[in-house]
Image (cartoon, rainbow, N blue to C red; front, side, top):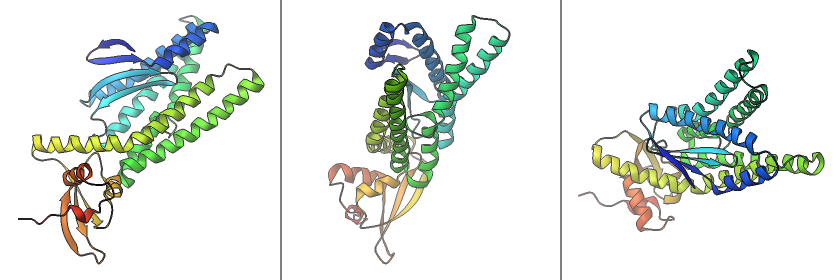
Length: 293
């Protein structure tokens, strides 16, 4: 559901968020919940402002039942340092707001109840998002670091697995709280959407990478020159295995060798992308080598 559009950015409300608001309203917790999600909104604005400072275009910001997500165009292709800075901007914003609220609490500048809620909520939002699990901000930082070592897809899978594990742990704690402590099952809601979002990130990794490869192909055509990374691969490796090692940040040129290490030829990631579209994902890499005229 579209909330508003400002500065070219769409601000959306997830339908499940509206359901959550309705349930909390019935439980008499509507206004505290709206206050907390206004803090989540400010957290996401931290991501937006940092991304814009690097010249990236923010498409939309969506509020979800467990938090929010800013969708930023070109972030995947940016330097990992940029992705880490954008990811950390949200938690740092929340921690700054926690410190500011605590200061205002000390000088008794605003109603105590709301300042105490702001301190607790901002600390929880900031620290929780620093956990190294997708789709949390800490998970995006860890994914950016792992991408340099093992490629985007594998890095995303590892960070997403932690996200799913965290979702399961929170779910178990939530069940215990609900059954034995008679607390509102908010942890169950967070656990469900954390697991769901991590699963979605893991499942979408290959499609996001393919879109990135297509974008780099277009960038090469427009700019004529872009940064590249060399790779060496055996000709028998299937295309579905090779793409795990391609980087969203660098255009790849692959030297293909046989079992004895002799060079069979070289291909670009554009040819790999075309091969994936025209042939089977199980096609061996050497099947793409064509005689050079």
